[in-house]
Amino acid sequence: MIKNTLKSILVMGLTTSSLWAGAEAGKSAYVTCSACHSADGQGLAIGDKKMAPSLTASSIVNGDPSLLALVILKGIKSEGSNYMGMMAPLEAVYQDDAKFADLLTYVRSSFGNKSAAVTVEQATQFRAKWADRKTPVSRVELEKLAK
Ligand code: HEC
Image (cartoon, rainbow, N blue to C red; front, side):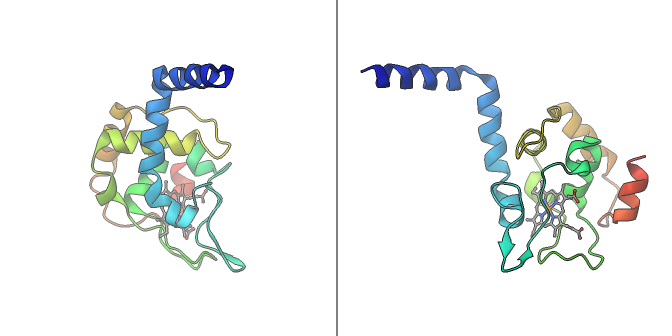
């Protein structure tokens, strides 16, 4: 009885919080990324190698959100990194600005990250900002852009 009451209070609390809906949408938008970065954001381990780096404490994830958007939309140029996967351009998966904003917010607020949410308006701006760009971004270029 008490257990059920507590449960319904908890469920009510979760469903009435607007943050919850966004977090759920973000989590499902992240499924594509989890193939390499894993559900916990730490990078899927294959033997002694990893498919992709950890997204915790990443300066790209937690820095200028337009650069996080750039990495996801256009990919990272593969220049002999130690990872088994490749950061391919994922523009085709995130054509919807609301879904893209949910994804960016989810990554920036999960896995121990505590960076600000990204609005749909920002997602629209970031997409426009990088619209003419055709090639994946290099690490050197990312460092320059971050300054
Ligand atoms: C097919 C595998 C794969 C998928 C899918 C993938 N990534 Fe990656 N990601 C990588 C690899 C590999 C790197 C490292 C690239 C390099 O340095 O060469 C990377 C790098 C990154 C980085 C840079 C991290 C840092 O601090 O250096 C971010 C941010 C990132 N990915 C986010 C995402 C997000 C968000 C998604 C889903 C929308 C995603 N990735 C999907 C493989 C993947």
